[in-house]
Image (cartoon, rainbow, N blue to C red; front, side, top):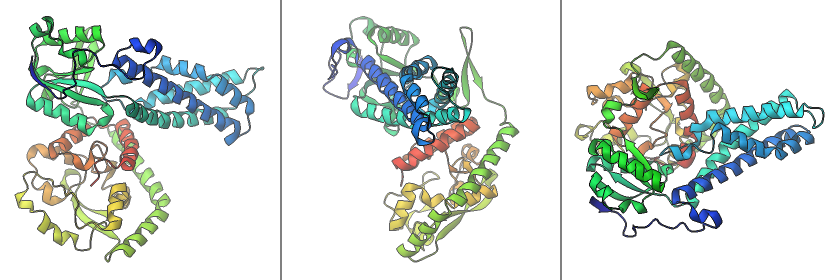
Length: 474
């Protein structure tokens, strides 16, 4: 084996896990982490059911019997969640987010509420109305979604990350490392980097893997027989194995893996987005932007007052941006910089010397005090709801760029102008300002090639977490 260990404390024996007691002492590190997470998630689900019971027992009605039976039968809700698969999904993926299981949580809440409706309509226990069942379902769903997200954060805080070895070329290792840095919810710690490995070293007692919890392999630099051997080692010693496909260009973003019995088939998405999807997307844009403009009007008035008190100049900032098919439109934002920011930009950023069509400014001197808060909270983009209502933008889409930058696009970059730009989008929920230009393009290509209403709703929900987290904001 050739390569380097990144920490001197990588030993030849599996690392002990502090705090194991009883039967847990016989578990591997991965088994211990998984078992703890399952128990924590089950506890959060019971708490969510309790919130649902309170909503029909005290908060919004007065049905003590329904509250009693809902909490009493909470273990059956946990069993139902287990049958649906809500406790076994994390260990199957490198990066698992609570939002990925929203359909399953909704199914669980619906099935649980329907079961309670049937049970509490029996003569002995009591009664539950359809309205109460709907309230139980909605409250339980929202509580479970929120509590599961909090639980995963606490679990990551309480448990050590998976000790990870990466096998691949320098470029492949750098790519994988970058993703781990951008998305800490993967909960990995790289302790070894290996450019290559051969099957003889694995079979002849080279046991470096004994201190590893996960192995990430790039199959472009690893023989298939080595992957088979690593899989056998992983099964025998509870070591996770993740394999990066042979060629990212070959697999691409718009590819789905299917099976005909035991035959794997890659299906390439080469069809256009259905017009019905675009119509519903536009209807969602109109409805949400119109309602949001009304609801946020008082907040907008306070922001306008704060901008005026903070620095001289107009409340709003507008600029010509490139829309779908390079059609120009005027974007609106709350002003977050000094009044002459546009004139000063040429002094700070020499566009003619840019190596790629983007720029990032850390600690931009043109940003005002209130502007820094508005940018970090994304409240400066609230006026773009007008652009959405007018049809120039969408709620979700690629970032709208200045024409000075779009004019520097290469032909392979123009795909991002094939759809309307968005107030939020894949870039805003996957790194924001810390992404490189190539990373932005890759993320936005994945979104465009797989555009769907479900993807839009997922990004909208993730935007809330990105805004409150503030990670990557400039």
